[in-house]
Length: 71
Image (tube, rainbow, N blue to C red):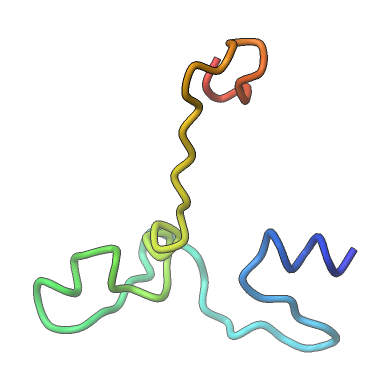
């Protein structure tokens, strides 16, 4: 189970408390403008998820083999 969690998460906590930073649309911080409005430079909130996106291309893939979100 731990091997799976490490691949799909950014933090694995064992018998402890999380930081308390919520992943919500209202939570955001950064540096001076314009960094504070650029999701590439925030480490908290829903926009921080964008920092960890990994684009995947399905070139010439049969429709039946595509993930459900792309069918």
